[in-house]
Length: 356
Image (cartoon, rainbow, N blue to C red; front, side, top):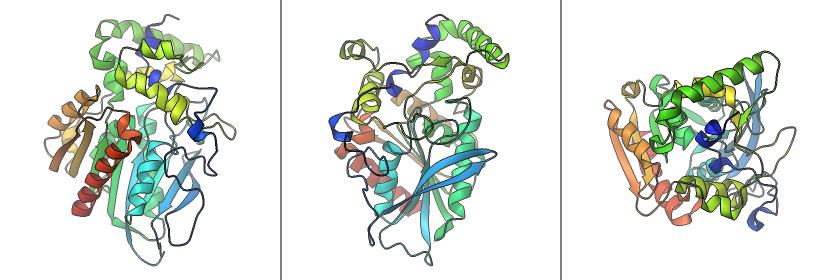
C-alpha cells in the first residue's frame, strides 16, 4: 500500500517505543506515567480505583479517582475525562483526573474500546462511533458510583477526546458543563490532513481505506496506520508539524506507557479500515446542539489551535462559552508542562465550580 495513508496518520504523536525514558523506568503500581502520580492509596488523600465495566460485549478498563476525605455517604461533583488519540488513561487524562480530584471532584478516565487495557478485537479500531460511546459509557458508570451527584456531572475531552466530547455532548445532556483541552478534530484531520495538507488526496485515500476494509472483511490481514519502531532523533526533526514532533517524544519517550496485560497499551496505530468512518465524520457537525456551558482551552503556540478556533465559532448555542488561550503553550505542552497544566486546571476548576 502506498505511503499516502501513513503520511496522513497522527502517527508521530502516537509513536511506539522499545525503551522508556528514565523518568518512567520505575514503573508506577498503577502504571501511571505523569508527574506527581499516585503510588499508593492513603486515607485522607486522593485515591485511585481501577474498575471495569461493559459497553455491549466489550470490557472497558477505567480508573476512578476519589477526592481527599472521600465519604460515600456525601455528594460530590464528577467529571468524565476522555483521553487523546493513541493515548491511554494513565497519561495526560490521568494527570487531569488526579488534579481535579485533589480539589473535590470524583473523576473517571477510561481506555477507549479496542485500545489500551480495554477489550475489543481487532486491536486499535478507532471509529468515532466507538469513541463517542466510550464517553457515554463513562457517564453511565460514574453516575452509579457512590457519592456522585448526577446533577453536577461535567466532561473534559483532551485532543482527539476533545473532538469526541463535543459530539457526545450534543446529545448527552447529563453533562452540565463541557470542556476541551487542545481539541483535535479527528475527522477533519483524517480527511483533509493536518492543517489541510492533504486535501488533494482525499479520494485516493478513501479508495485505499475501502480496499483495506474489503481485505479485512474477507478474512485477510488487518492493516494499520502508524505504529512500528520509534522514530529516531533525525526522523523526529524532519517531521513537518510541531505537534507531531513533540508528540513523538511525549508518547514514545518521556511519557511512554509500559505494555501490560494481554494487549499493548499506548502505541497509536489504528486500523486502516477505520478511515472511511473517520473521514466522513466531523466533530463540528451539529455542534449547535451544544447548549451547555462550554470552555475550550488551547495553547497560543499550538499548531492545532485552528481546530479549537473553528469549533468554538460554530458552537453558537453554547451557554457562557469561553475560549481560554494559554500563552506560550504548544499542543503537547498542555499535557505535562507544570506551569501550563496549572493554568488549565485553575481555569477548569473555576468553570466547573460556576457551572456544576
